Image 1 (cartoon, rainbow, N blue to C red):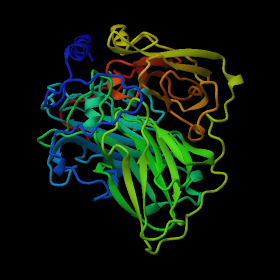
Image 2: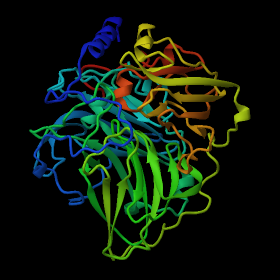
Image 3: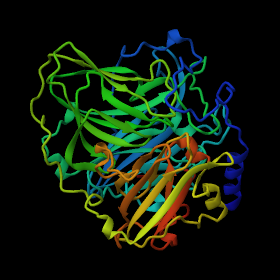
Length: 534
C-alpha cells in the first residue's frame, strides 16, 4: 500500500465520527460495575423473539474446492446479503459465503490449507460510508506475517488474496475474522467471523465427545434499528453492546441434548462484551482446552470468564439431568459491560430421553502431554518487558503509543524484537480504570503466570493467545518465540475490544530479522482482476 493510501486510511479514522446507524448519541462511559438497562434496540420489542424459542443451529462446514498430496484449497467470498437473525425480520449483513457466522473450516495438523478470500463487498458501507477494505486474520494460527491478516495488508472491494496456513500447531479451536485497519469492529459486527478447527492424532485418540456431541457456541451480541438493520453505537469508541445475545447467529436458542456428555467449543466473538458463564442449575463442568489447545488435565469449575476472542472448550454431563428438564447456560456479567433485560441469558439445553451413541463419552484425567507454552518456566526468561494499557486524549494506547505511531514510522516501530527461540515475560498492566482489555498477542501461545500476584484462574491454566486484563489488574505472561526455522518478522499485539483496537490500542513486535520475504504488506499483496485457478 502506498504512503498516500496509508495517509488516507489514517485520515479516515481520525476524521470520521462514528455514530449509530440511526445517528444515536454516544453514552457516557465508563460504567462502574455491571449496569442494568431495559434495552438498546429500537426495533419493536414484539419483533424480538422470547429467549429460548428459536431452535439451535451450527454453522455449515466448508468443503475444499480441491485437494492435493499436501494441501486443501478453499475459496470464500466476502459478500453483502440480507439475512434473518430475528425471525421474519430482514437484516443487511456481511458474511463469508453469505453465512453469519461464516462456514467452519476443518483442518488436520501437518496438512496445509490455502484459503482464497475474495472481497465482493460494496464500494462503501451503506450507512457509515467507509470503504470496506478487509484483511483476514486466522486467530490462533502461527502464520507467516504476510498471511496473518496484518492491519495494513488490506484487500479493497474487487480484490482477492490467497492465505497460506501451515497447520503446524496442536489441535485447537481457532477462528478467522476481519482485521481491516480502523474498521475491524464494524466489519466483524456485520458478520465477518467464522470457526477454523485443527485436529491432530493426540486429540483424535481421546474418548472425548465428537460428531453431534462436539458443538460450537459462537457468542455475540447485537442491537437492532427500527428497520431491522444492525444498530451501530460504539459509545465514543469504548465498545459496542447489544441487547440481543446470539449463539451461532441465533438469538437465545434452545438445543436438544441427550443424557450424556457434550463438548462445547465456546468462542466469544462479541465486539466488546465479556461473559461470566455458569449453568443455571449450578452444575460443575470441565474445561478441557483453551485458546492454544488441550490442557494437560481437565479443570472442574462452576463458572468461567470469557473475554472477547477467548476460546474455551468445556464438557458438560447431562446424564444427571432428568429427561424433559431444561438447563440454561447463563451470563452473570462482568464489570463495565451494560446489562439489558436478557443479557443474562445465552442458550438453553433441553434434555431428552432419546437414544444416543454411548462411545466417546469420557474425559480422561490426562488429556495431552504439556503444551510447549505450559512447559516453560519463569527461570527460562531472558527478558521481562512491561506493557501499560490506558486511554489518553480519547485514544486507546499501549505504553503511550498507538497504531498511528506505527503507521507514521512506515511500520518499523516495534514494542519488542526477540530473537527466534527467545523466552520472555511480558507484564501487562491495565491502567485505564473503567474498562477491561482482552489482550491478543499474534503468532505465539503463552502461559499466564500470575494475575495480580496470584495464580491464574483454573480455566486459564492452559495455552493462551488472549488474556483478560481486568480493571486495574496486572498479569504476567510467559512465552517462547519462533524457533530458528519458524515464522519471523512483524506481528501485532492489540486489545480485542475491537473499538479499542480501531482507536488505536495496537502495536507490533518483530521476531528476528525483517526482510522482503516476510514483509506483511508487500510479500503477498492482494490481487486485482480475474482470479487464477486454485
